[in-house]
Length: 83
Image 1 (cartoon, helix red, strand yellow):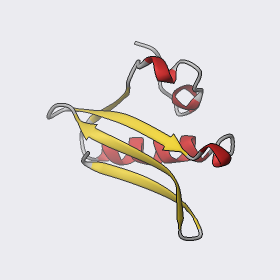
Image 2 (cartoon, rainbow, N blue to C red; image 1 turned 120 degrees about the vertical axis):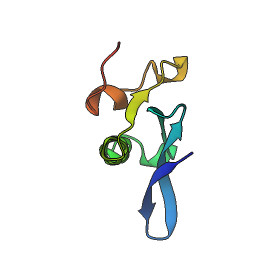
Image 3 (cartoon, rainbow, N blue to C red; image 1 turned 45 degrees about the vertical axis):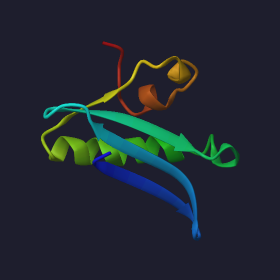
């Protein structure tokens, strides 16, 4: 992990998005939000912040095609498209 964006509710961490440097030019984005906080746009905001910073660091962000992401709309809402 080379970069993270964290969401808090008071002092409690409720969500985190990380970028892993899979190579010198590509960074894989991952995100998770506590179940009771899902559906509030937190994951999308975290992924957007992380994506912007990753691009500013001249790395290409990508969202994995892991089967756990099939039901998630976060990647789509964050501007990622299947490739």
